[in-house]
Image (cartoon, rainbow, N blue to C red):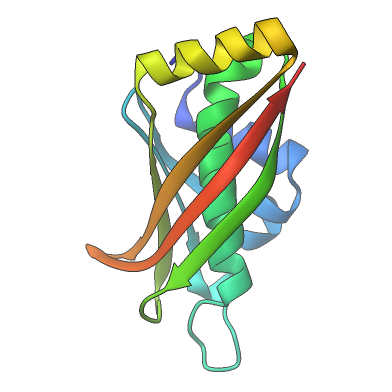
Length: 148
């Protein structure tokens, strides 16, 4: 995975290309070779019970996985979209929604880029843990498609 952008640069990209992230108060905490971590305050993403709105949790998880792929594929100008996703909500979040997506192995990214080069299209499934503190509050899984 190529990580020449700082977390601030990734955050700027998200806020520019996905305006919802700005409204949600999304902040990129880390963009490393092993994971991408983003968060958003419940104060901007709450429901009628003053806990995190399910749609905001899902959006944050989707954006987190998207950022992992964008970081790797931006050099080849690929378009990345989510094709399918599911989420399990395990407990309410009351303060900060934090999404973490592990970066796939180098072999997985080589396979993804090879498929993209050969067929013009590639698919990958990514998982995101959404936590409040150290406790998992939601589990997201999504299939993303990259096209040239």
